[in-house]
Amino acid sequence: MDERQLNTLKTLLEKPKKIAVIPHRNPDGDAMGSTLALQFFLEKLGHSVTVISPNSFPHFLDWLPKSENVVLFDQENKKANQLLEQADIIFTLDFNSFSRTGKEMQSVLEKINTTFIMIDHHQQPDDYAEFMFNKTNTSSTCELVYEFIHLLNKPNLIDKAIATCLYAGVMTDTGSFRFPSTSSNTHRMIAHLIDEGADNSLIHQNIFDTKSPDQLKLLGTALNNLHILKEYQTAYISLSQQELDEHHYKKGDTEGIVNYGLSLQGIIFAVIFIENQEEEIIKISFRSKGDFDVNTFARENFNGGGHKNAAGGRSFKSLHHTISDFEELLKKYSKQLKIKA
Image (cartoon, rainbow, N blue to C red; front, side, top):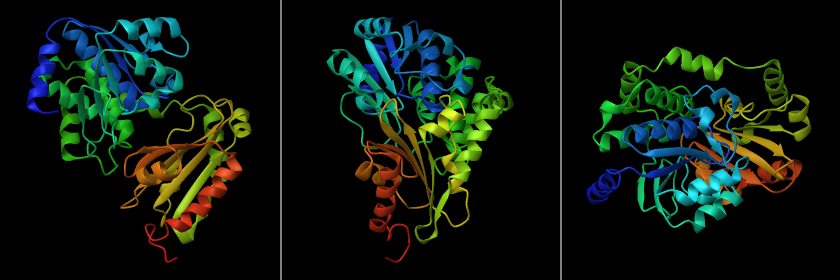
């Protein structure tokens, strides 16, 4: 966003507006933290703001301030559509393509004639937004919201609620500040958020220390399904719909499981395949260390994308065939995986 655009945006936000703020489908900590933080901030500027999520968010995020007021598009369709049609401005956070909201919401957004503002840190954004604040080398969308608040010269408006939401999003999207995208700027921001009231210990407990027995047993099943392909420095995990059902799966229960594969010595590429019979897809998460670009891998092969070291994708084949295709694909990437063909 150049200076001219920024000044135009400042003018646009000077008078009260009806604003909708949207995360991507199946929102994670960064998506929910950034949207709720932005809602608090824009309300302080005098705007009427509603967060509209394509669908529900994981239970370990339901303690976030104002999360109970989030409108769920798939459950409150009439209300959500009305709010979107009446919005003077729509902010889209933590995604850069309408397709990331799901087919039904995508079709609605594509027809709306209003001002779109994108705040996102993923690669290769679509061009639907009139204003775009996109930085791919930033740790999280929450960090970009923090920068956005500073660009508007309003850091004094950051309070405990905003700080809490931003801290939660940065913490989850950086793997508790251990991923390469975590910079010195990230840590300086985190220090400021703690100063403004973010209780770092409590936030960690609320997100990570709330597991049920079923979740731990599901983790055990996932680890039992771990496959290691040493010749490609790769590990993958799979979970079938039956295995999810047996452990009473709830949204968010598989969060972070893919990282167990990446924690193995000698592994630089880790994947988890999760069957979703309702959506008739295999949901896939990719993680890597070093130079192996999982964003490119996901885009080229699995209808996805994301970041260099963390991306997602999907397959419309069966779980068995998806995994077979994946194993065959590794031969094509043997040089990038530093293995002799």
